[in-house]
Length: 384
Image (cartoon, rainbow, N blue to C red; front, side):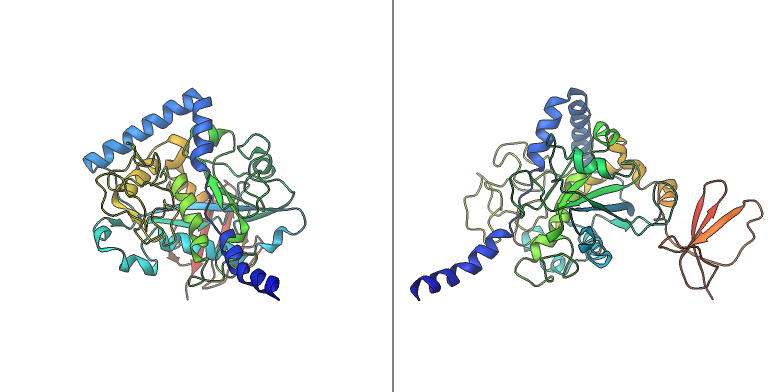
């Protein structure tokens, strides 16, 4: 009986210990840029531009939309990751990058004045690289982890990757690393043109922490004890937009290259309790920052917004093409505006399809894709 009691008491701690954030972005990027001098030079240039933009407050502020595609991989049942699960994950991203998460209005007083709405939206791609309608998800049967064969994930990425200058690719896997653990959360590459050209640019992510309470997600909802894990995708997208860990270099300058995030002595900040060792001169840590390993992820800072916008306005990694008008049209992520039926005599209409790629007839109050002979695509809604 005593042994049984001890075992039962240990179960909650074992379960909670499994859901921990482990992002190896810093390590993989350091290794890549050290091995590729030209890529390192490009990264140093982008870092310099980001510092100048923050100092001069010159980063353009605009509403940006990024097309996103999820490539789901599993040896037996990739469909365990459902459309509802993926949509939930995208909804969380859109909350977090627009200051719409409930916690945003209840941040620590010390950081409320620099908490930022990045004005970045994410759209599940509605048109694939071949011009066909898509729901923004691809499914693949394989057992590749997120690292093999050489640490960059080339195996699983080689199964399916959409042009990195047009889509944010997210590869969903069972094992993110090669250490045999199924509980590592994810990692991403910083902007790099060479990585994009190789089809390696994007995010590797654990399906268990994708979205709330749908499909294969282990995160039951926003109030569950492991709710922070569904926000790890926000953390990884931050890396994709050139944001570093707030604990980068710990107490040693230059830290995360952002001036308004205090240096952090230990990753995991203070577990939202402010009770760990602090760096010299720091009285309070921004432990609500998405780029920490935090239990209370809630915000980005104005400096992080400037750094992300600098990356998105740069050609490094083709980040500026992602949200161009032409690309949003090509990927089906342009803003839908109300229209009336019109005469397309100047262009030959090939077919009309719905969001699942099925041919359809014109109908009112329903978004449809009009595919033309000249290769253009229009997403239309005909209102009554």
